[in-house]
Image (cartoon, rainbow over all chains, first blue to last red; front, side, top):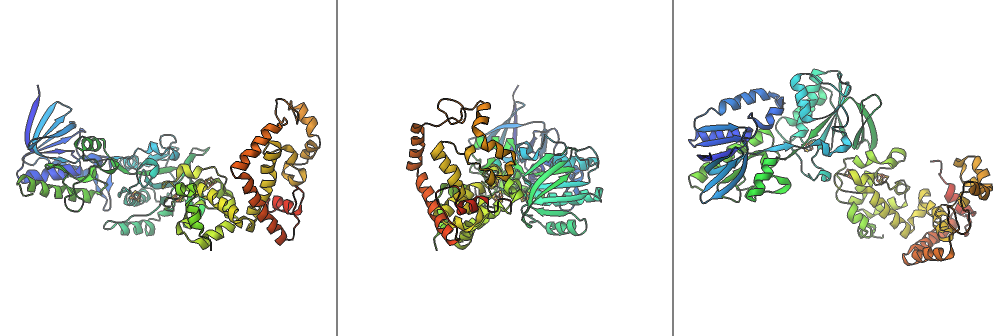
Length: 344
Length: 232
Ligand code: SF4
Ligand code: SF4
Ligand code: SF4
């Protein structure tokens, strides 16, 4: 039998953006239904260990999310995917893969991002050689407290490569993913804390230390931890006879091609529009560049879309850092409140 | 001064190959020429990006533009869709057209190449013919080549070639009709005129260098351009 849910706001996606928005809307007295396609809430935070730049534990944050969703007026469903949204007169109708229909006054898309699939950059040997891993796989290693390289043992030399899947016309992503530079700096420090003797080399094109304390952390990683930075993007990785990883790059500051052999290569994978973001944006005609959802006006109405009542927040719009996405969620709450009270 | 950049920007290889370089170094890291020679493909983009005709002129006179092996690995990898290898071929063309190629030793080899490969195609139909690989000009072939060279006909015969004879088989004689066709292609596509340009600038340079030059593969200027810096 078909189930119909009536609510004020349907929030799609229970990552940081969706949770913070749903929580604050519920506290204002609105009825909120929050949907998450995965079994657990937290979105991409689930895949991390500690967050930059203050090394806050992701678990603490997830715990906080767990506390936030028990607020009055908020109902959360996990393991449910919203597959379709459409407007019907003054209401929005969302349907789920579980056969439910949600009738709401407004919809907030907080469908987030997906990490770039490193297989597309075949020249780095991801999925081909042992010891070539993504930044998210490295987070997993950190969670387990054990770092191992291509030979399954503690690495002596580790390379970090920035901009994998970002700033790269060859994979169709010309934009910068915003979070990976500082995340690489964080990794450098985390490696040195666990393996003080390991040599760490971060290959970058530009180090974008744009947030508060980022520059300080970068400096600290050099001065106190001895992380090395080489300006040049790795062109390819290959396997050596003894199962290590050989890298080719140019040290563009010395203007010399270099070869380096390491035990572990960490690819700092970028941010792409998630499947849900692409799917729902396409259905509603709000898809912008690179599959991200497009706001009505970047400077004036960045949580609105061309459709009254359909709102967007967080990384479904573009790459954001954690504080930025949460700030955007709060901004969306105000816009939705104005809309529901006919103030806009 | 000639507006070199303007001329280059009309070349389709520059239109396609110069977008906006962000100096990531990927092309240099992958470039086989950069591994062995004082050559850096990234710098080619950088110089062209400045549109500075003085710098471009220096490039046209320099050895730098003659090291690239045209493998196009840079095309496959550049994250900004530049193609240094294509810029190089446009620069070489401009260097040939403006005569600036004679100012560098690698550039002067244009003469040697035109006299051997280009003329060999026109005369024999083969771009490289064993006859033209003279032992005294090719020490890298080793002493045994001397013997091969002096007994080419017999050896070719033993290897089953149809050396310089009519009919099918490798190293066969290319008939007049086919040679006329090849020559006609060079004529209408501008190849002949191009060779004349190379020869006329080279003749001037030979005079400047006080070296004799004639139509043969024995003139002092030919030998000079063929062997100069060949151990570098
Ligand atoms: S944040 Fe840094 S690593 Fe990430 S895409 Fe931008 S420049 Fe590259
Ligand atoms: S085409 Fe030339 S510049 Fe490009 S990688 Fe090959 S040798 Fe280097
Ligand atoms: S790969 Fe492309 S962007 Fe990078 S240095 Fe070479 S030409 Fe410039």
